[in-house]
Length: 295
Image 1: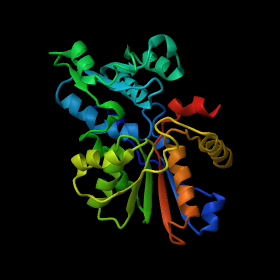
Image 2: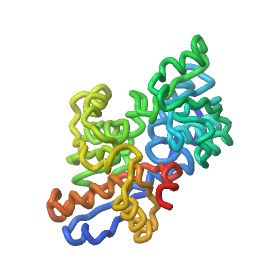
Image 3: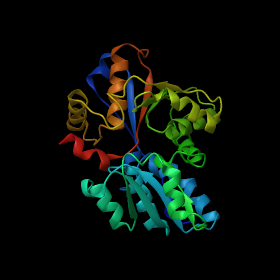
């Protein structure tokens, strides 16, 4: 496998927001967004062992699904170009109404884009079989990258922690990052509570998905901070993200990381944490897909 698949541990920086000082909390952010410019954040960690499995099975192509602004599509396209796979991305939406920098970068990396109407997008199995039935060269990567092979890559985050944290927070979309974090903390026997902030409406169903990957490993899932649903925003969330960027110099997007951080500040305001507790939050990347929502 290409040597660049192994990456150094991402840096951890302190977060100084007024609410954290008021509540006497020590809060830090792990900058997984800096791992790679295009295979950034949790996408790199999820794909690490997926790509190794694809190579071990002598696959030469990757196929996956995603929305028009999907950072997952961009990550797979970049990974394909980097590690020698042809790539196909099935995109939710009509081609004429989807012209954006994310898909242009996917195309630049050589990804073949197949556009599917929003109505038909739920029929993923049909479309995959339509294009790849009996094609043994193709490796299927689930939408969002969450699968059994994604868990070990995310779990390695726990190996990078040289200090104790009382809590670790991550944004949660498909559940893979939360599952991997919980697995890693469990394997290292750390006395740390792992929290996921669901960015989708009705996120309780994620418990069943996560259980398939890690069984009864403990974690916490917060389902009331989705701000209306996946990729839904409001003025309060957008203003929070803009203010955070101005005051920290750290670029975030309102689909994942901003929702998690906003939830963290609201939990702090409601005295969810004890004074002097130490909290680590994950910057899971994804800034490419969310830029447009901040302007």
